[in-house]
Length: 237
Ligand code: IPE
Ligand code: IPE
Ligand code: MG
Image 1 (cartoon, helix red, strand yellow):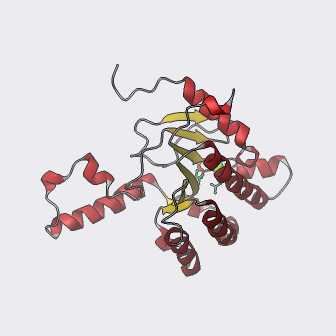
Image 2 (spheres, protein in one colour):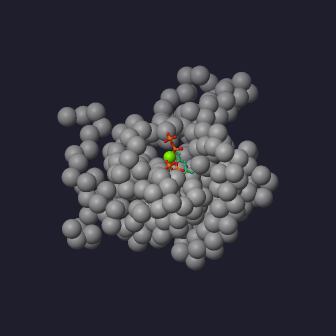
């Protein structure tokens, strides 16, 4: 299909999965799967921007991923450190705005500072918004949001009657962002794994068996083509 004829979704959310199995299949350590997976993320940000996607939200580390071995978690933290620096440079060069969702307070100081810098130094960029979900969980996000909302009610800044869907949305990490139009999950599993639970009420889902390190622009276009063939409904007829 001619990619210029595709209707491009405004917001694509991705659950990148299958790094470990990709490595295992090749007889490599799991960590090598994550290394390759990071390269795929870098390439995909460029592809998404070129296709005209406005928001790309990538699940990098879930609130549940702390349960992995200490070795794997610390390997992932090292990769964050390395790629944060590269991303800051490329985002500045390519007019990409970076947003971080999830509870970053649990990370080491230098990682928190790196994430803050990524957001702060790119906030005026007008191209693709690249959203990284780290220490992110949909339930955790809602709980943190509701806690702040409750504090505002207690302080008299908000009344219970004012609480509606729009109001609650503004307390989430994704405040100000459109909901995802398309979710892509690689790696063959067909579940949400606590991703963007509130935001994906009407998102179209696309699952592929391709392991994340093998995902590329062609696969992205395949997902968008499939999305183009769907008739989206939001509860109407
Ligand atoms: C996704 O790949 C990366 C993260 C969750 C950080 P996995 O590490 O989950 O790979 P599989 O699912 O074990 O193959
Ligand atoms: C989902 O992948 C989380 C991320 C991609 C960060 P997981 O591999 O952690 O999810 P489960 O364990 O298959 O649900
Ligand atoms: Mg997995």
